[in-house]
Length: 219
DNA sequence: AAGCATGCCAACCGCGGACTT
DNA sequence: AAAGTCCGCGGTTGGCATGCT
Image (cartoon, rainbow, N blue to C red; front, side):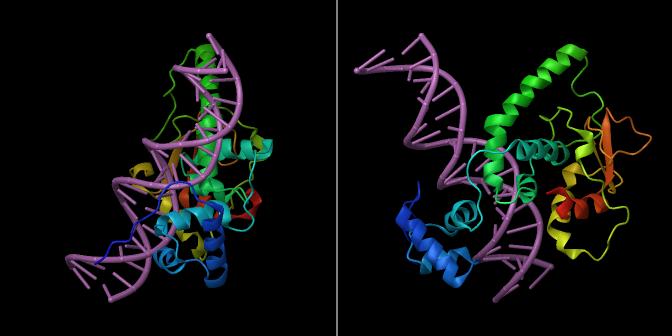
């Protein structure tokens, strides 16, 4: 069969217009078909990315507000590099934007703060980390009262959480019993179990956390 | 003014999971 | 059940803009 030549690199305004018009007319989904039928010489993945990150309605561009920044920091502390999950809590922001913002602004700031804190406390950085997680760069203490409590009772019928539940349940973050996550974290969140020292770790049930994250209370 | 270094961000790549045949 | 395809994710790279020497 004849392989189409795939164009790469920056998108031109004409290409944006074509893709936008096509998606608005035919809808999202099946990006391989979109790229073919719209006449764009782009791969399906490229079309999808461009639409999702730039052309979609309600995309928010520009600098992050302090509130957004704070939310990113706190979410990253909880979730690690789950950019799509974090972006889901920031209306109009994309995972790519959140990821870039973290890598260019917050990550640097945090490692600096981390070094200062460790030097001041004179303790080992891995101390009190109870389980493997992707939160290796997150150490700064957020404002405890700003995080809403998780739901008290698990709603078992909430199947809209399946995607996040699947992601949250990735094996590398599961403990031996497969039931709970324990993240090294020094935040004083209501998530913490009463018996646990707030300054050392946060413990929560996956089944509780996922619907909680999915609730609008966090936005 | 020119060359180099650094910062930033858009886009690509590879992988894994879900879905379809 | 197996193979193929699609989709979405996180990591990484390329290139432009800006600052510094």
